[in-house]
Length: 272
Image (cartoon, rainbow, N blue to C red; front, side, top):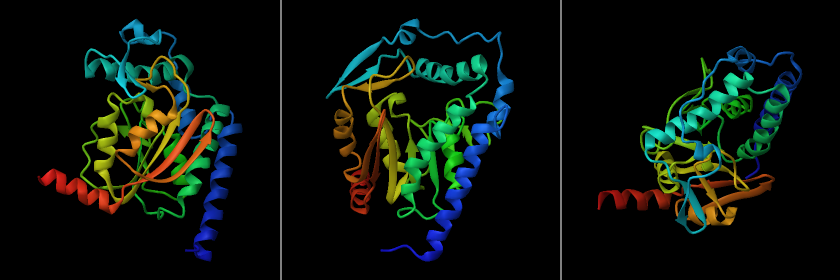
């Protein structure tokens, strides 16, 4: 169904707002908004957390089958410490991200989120899982999704976009969100549990949008795959209704829907 003229005019307005703020992030001296705050966090005396050095050396992988590998953490607590350390080092060693990096991230997020307008109303409740400093949340809000928010194990200090939270155990009610977005699939402690949690909290007819990194990743990832098709095969078991898939190297992003029929089957299985 064609969108109304009023809706399309709104698209133009929000898109223009996004572009204006991206210019500020790119060229405002010392950073713009919350990014400017993070510049003052830098601490030359920061001591990294005590994490198994094998992980920093890109080691510790175990075969999970079907072309998937998971990091062999000794405990969930070890996993949490390791995942928090990535943003800590960005904050304390570098004072956050530079202007050009944030502008690049914003352009990448815009390339995904502008496709959501035909599917999600602007009052949609959207969770950005593993959002770190919250650039994806900021872009969603720039595009009119004012109820977007993020969670992360380590959101940094005084974050206006992201609150402390665990995307493996969100604590959210069943069917409470219109969409979950994440580009941190490769940071999931357990991929089956990760996708199962997202399916639980998304409403019937709601969506998940995943950015899937191509390649083997670095020293902080908790999951990896031989190729993106190995991961997509796993995803199909949780969200079989694929709406859109697009390659944007080094990413493949996919938009999937939790169909009402699938939600009914989940409810029936839970009662049996």
